[in-house]
Image 1 (tube, helix red, strand yellow):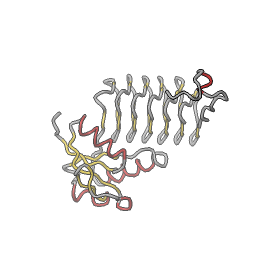
Image 2 (cartoon, helix red, strand yellow):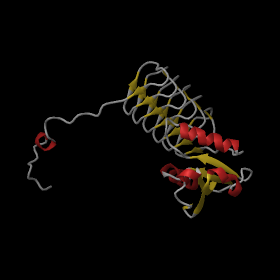
Image 3 (tube, helix red, strand yellow):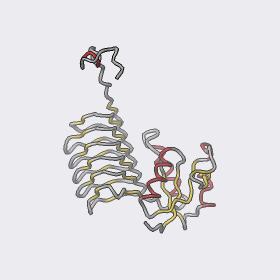
Length: 229
């Protein structure tokens, strides 16, 4: 794949490393460096590329020559990612999107900027994805649904048709919505949650871990306790 555009990644943590891997091996972007806020700088190189203070990013990676992508997860209900995107835009950067070549994105889907879409997402007819949205791998986003700015959708989330996810919300692994459900702003939808009706802003839906059976596994499967294999 020809590398036609230079990119600086804002974020030097695990998501920054993931973004480097995906942009490098599945896009036409050439990653030229990384940036982090000066107070959090802990290294000066990654992948043999410079890591610079975000406050000085434009001196080494001018916005007229580089695009940027903020690779930060859902820290503080996605507020950190939103704030860093704002800083990058104020410095004049165009914020790049990553859309996996292994994602299914229908032709009339609309995307904001600084979107990151992993493999095996299915995004259907007339879906709208806002700025700063992260879709981890394997989600279903049904027709005419909308995911507003700075949401984080974990893996294997089921969002059917005509739903709306309020800005800055988080959806945990295997969360499921009913059709036509509207999730408020700043919602935390825990793993495996099932939401059947609209939610208000600033709600948290947690789930309890499945308790272990009182019957031990080896007894249930008639495996002797002294079995070596």
